Amino acid sequence: MAIAEIIQRNVGGTLIAIELEKPYPENYQQTVQQVVKENETGYLPPLKTKIDSMQNYDVVFLGFPTWDMQMPPPMKSFLHQYNLSGKTIIPFNTNAGYGVGSGFQTVKELCAGSKILEGFETKGGLERDGVYFVIKDERAKEAEAEVKKWLQKIKVME
Ligand SMILES: Cc1cc2nc3c(=O)[nH]c(=O)nc-3n(C[C@H](O)[C@H](O)[C@H](O)COP(=O)(O)O)c2cc1C
Image 1 (cartoon, helix red, strand yellow):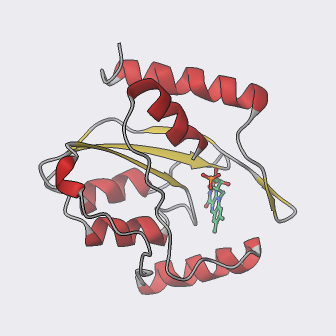
Image 2 (spheres, rainbow, N blue to C red):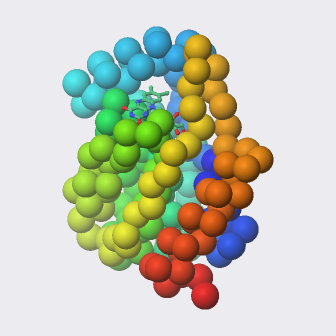
Image 3 (cartoon, rainbow, N blue to C red):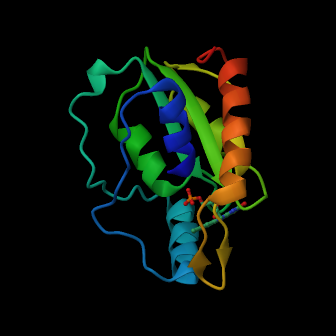
């Protein structure tokens, strides 16, 4: 969300968070185990978030963290549920330092009819002892500089 807000500050747009009907457990390890299982079976968790104005958007920034070195199941649900063909998709990713994994490749596979611009990945909030840290202070400034450089490179910002 921190990166999404930086993007919005610089290029505008509407922020939408993808939420599940049944949120993941509070416990980090339990969530990791559940996600690994969902990835193995290809389970697509039902979304609480409903977007009925998708046709109004030509450009969609698609942000997700790396989970199990992949795109998280809720984003897979989203891309299966909504048809983004004909739109420009701009993916971005946060991870704990291991990179995006197969996430951007999965964007290509699930958005075959879309124009996909070069994605951005950065180290995001970290999990330590089961506690989440968010991007803030010095790290937020650093992240903002990285994001701006990318937005200029892909020519969505001057
Ligand atoms: C279920 C789960 C699985 C994760 N798996 C990975 C992983 O495989 N590789 C990695 O670099 N980070 C992994 N992480 C760490 C997240 O990618 C990292 O904390 C991310 O920056 C969180 O972003 P957010 O603050 O936008 O949720 C995982 C986190 C969770 C909750």
